[in-house]
Structure formats: C-alpha cells, structure tokens
Image (cartoon, rainbow, N blue to C red):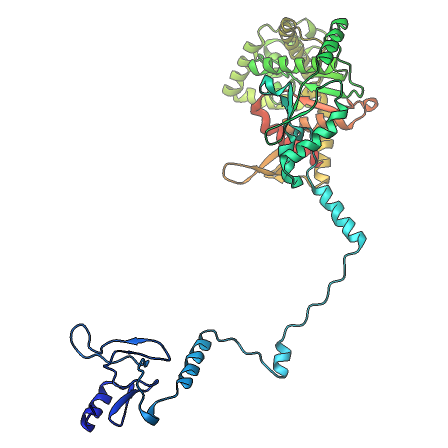
Length: 484
C-alpha cells in the first residue's frame, strides 16, 4: 500500500539512509523496498528482521540493503553493489603504490653488488681458524671409569655420549666406531668390546692377561711390574712451609704429609723430584724479633756466639716480642728500623735472624723425623730476595703493574672486592717493601724460567701443596705469572 507525501517525508526524515521512490522507499545502498519485510538480499546475503525492536518501538533499518524486491528504474544495479563491496575489501589491504618518475628512481635503493666467490685460500683460512678455536678432545673426554657393576666388565667408556652431539650422530653409532677402532689395539688384553644401552662401551680383561700380570708383579718385588716413565719430568713439589719462630699448625702438618706422599709417587714413577720447603723466614716481624733478641739475648747478635745461644721456647719468645711491639712505641720504632737494617744486610741483625732460623729448624726437624720426612730442601722467602726488584720492574715495563694509592699493584680481570671495585694484588708496598705475591712470582721465575746452570731449578712442573684458604692468593699469582 502506497504512502502519502507527508508520510513519505516523515519517513525520509526518520531514516535518512532510505530514499522515497514512487509509492515505496528504497535503501540508498542497493535495492531495499518496504524495509519492514523479512527478506534476504540476493547480493549481500544478509538477513533483515522486523524493524521493530524488543521494546516494541520501530527502529531504523540498517544502511546496508537486504531486500529482494525491486522497483523499476530506482533499483540500483547489483553489479554496482558487487563492485562497491570489492572496493571496500581493497581498502583494508591497500598496498602502497610505487612512485614513478625521476624522484622514485632517486629514492630507490641501489642494487646490491654481487659478492665475489670465496677463494680456496680464504676457505682454508676460515676452516683453520675454526679448527683452532674448537675445544680439543682431552683425556677427560674419554670418560673411562671402573665399571659400576660386575656384569658390565672391568672398565667402561662413556665417550660416545659426549661425542655424539658434536658429531651429529646417534651415540650408539659413535660407540660402534669406538669399538671397531679399539678392537685390534686391545687384542689379548680385553675380550670383545661390548656396547650396552644407548652407547656405553664395556671392557673386560681376559683371564690370560690377568694371570700374566699377577705373575709379573710377583717376580718384580721392587716395582710390582710397573715400568718407570720413558719421558721423565723435572718436578718441583712445594710443601710444608712453616713460619720461623712459630709453631707448626694442622695446615702445615697436612701439607707436609700430602706433599711428601706426592713426591714419593712421582719418584716411583721415574720423575726427577725436588722437594722444597718454602719457609716463612722474612718479613716485617723479624725486625721486632731481632730487636727483642738485642735486649734479651745479646749474644745472639754476635756472629761468633750466635750458634751457641739457646733461645728456648720460640713461641714464648715471639709472644713476648709481639707484646712489646703493641705496648711500647719506642720499641715499635726500633723494630721498624731493625727491618731496614736486616734487609740492608747489617751483620748484627743478620746474625740474630740466623739464630732464629736455626732454632726453628731444630724444632721442625723433630716433627719431620716423627713423620719420616726426608730430602726436604729449604728455600725460604729470603732465598728469592735478589729477584724481587727485577720482578716488579718487568711487570711495570709490560704494563701489568701500576701505581695504586702509593703502592704498586697488579689488577687482574675477574677479581673484585665485595663492593665491586677491582681487587689489587700488591707487589710493592708504599714504603718500598715487598710482600708474599712478589716472593711467589720470583719463585716461579727461579723455578721455571731459569735454567739450572744459571741458578734456577729448570722445572717442567711445579706442585703447590697449600691450604685451601690460600686458593685466591695463588690463583691471582698464577694468573699474573701467565700474563708475564
């Protein structure tokens, strides 16, 4: 049923998205006629329900038509609507158009130059560098251990598990390669090499080999069939190291026992072993002790009579001197002056110092005799005094030692104080004196770098047997020695 002009005007005002055409009104976007009807648009395929909402009021029809009825010339082409919908989709995925003309050519990135092919020399250089940077296969990687259970044999090799990842092969495949390579080499010693689990290589001695080995041990009472090293080393073992005029404590006893045991094993293996006792026989405390002897045992300062002086209880002597040093300012000044005289080679000061060292040796030797320690050569801190100045000078020339608050110190990467500041390793104090680190660096130089004919030890290896509390000190000393 058609609408009057006033009704159509009212409707147009109420629904601006719809236009009036003749007796009906059409959606401006396509072909809707009589929007109150329930219909589906053939083009946009959307469904329109009643224009009355749930509250019973008439609501405006949506702007997008869903009508199917058409009204003459006022109906818009469905093909035009299709083009409109396609245009909307393109807007969402709009691509940036390429610029044309001289400006576009100027802004266009220059084409990349074709890289020349790698030469054989360059390829070989890269491969060599990669091989040099790769971690070498070490004895630890062999992972040969005693078998965990008797059914696994006598030994087992777990190297296949660690090698598999770097080789890009299954562990069992690597184990098979190890087994094939070991088989001919171990013939007569082990039975056939077995592979168990994911890649464990199990080894079991033959009965004939065990029988022959036991017979050889029985016939060689001295070495039990163990041959000496065919390539012996010169090995220095630094152990015991008590302090002059002080008691040996448990740390010294432990170092003495372990160090002597290692020395015995190395000698049995055929190496040339030098046992060194790095006694604490130098330092500022000796100025205090010398001045105390000057007052209490004056005969100790005379080179002709110092050997006859009985110093008695050295620990009591040290405590008495320390008490005077803490309580008597005049004695403290004398003690500091005494250190300077001792280091300068004063005859009286040196005679008193030698008396202290001789008395201490007598006490230490009682303990060494009880433990069966033999062949321990004394190389005290004083032995390295001639090398100290040269060590510091060389460190300065290499730029490793620098001035720090009046002293000279070496700063090493990775060592910090609790507040995060660099931890210095002092090699020369602000008063010009030297300390433990300087002496240990000088000892390394004398033991390793100096040939035997020049007064050095000519060592191939040096073992330090010390308390774990000194671990950081030696780590820093060794790091500085490697850098120098």
